[in-house]
Length: 377
Image (cartoon, rainbow, N blue to C red; front, side, top):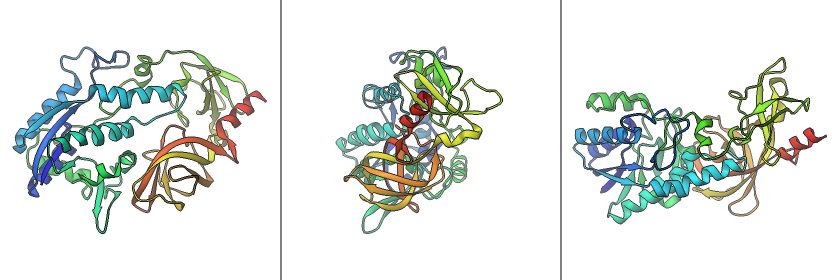
């Protein structure tokens, strides 16, 4: 079986390539370059502006050396325009609406498992492969489960990928843990065995995030308002740059602190915060999730959900509005469920699908409208 594997220059994808080769697959590797800092005006917040070699090219050199060690061919493709059009523009548009999108989910949906998947099909490969931590189970049908290494499980980031693309992708790391991956890499003397995991924005890397966004969204100072007291307690540096539930970087304190971001009004350019003792203002008990990509469904009833990647599974109940939109109920109340982010649904460890959180509610009131009413009196 001819396999095209996305080789990123990191240890996970390199070990995935090794495992597939050992299992007898005909493996070809391919490196994707999706971001050009100079072309995309990525200056503010970029620690690599004056570097002799950009991180993307450094990753390519690491991928090339790893492929050479493994005795595998390495192709290269550039999706800089596709990434800008399908991922980054959506990312910026969502921030300008006061929402908080997830670029990793958009990147998987539009680049790794769309543009790259089509590239593999057009060149006659039988299947795709990546170094993601997720389990592909083939029984009467093909479905997907959380990886055995729950600390590294990446099913959350793959919930928006179309079923046909996931079905035709191999995930060799689903049944092993990160420590084993590192051990394998050292045993076969891979150059990336001790390379640290990539962090930051998908395919862009580590940035001072607030400064980075200022390359694309103008900064406009405004009031920070305590929801409970209705007092202006500080100034924010641009309401777009804050996330519901955020604590660090608010720049406000005092006897009622620490403070958390509870909401924002893009039109009034106001940021609403609540103190630690008033964390009920972060709570919602229902959300509207739209355009769900069902991988094992559609379903309704009781199940579990994640509203953030590192969040523990939450008990929820889905009430279908139509095939792809649901109300997600959690009467126990959950903090910082955030419009623009992803709700991913599970039945135990089986991934059912995911969609974008459109609105949140508290006791049947739109949560953000409720906060604005408190402020206005």
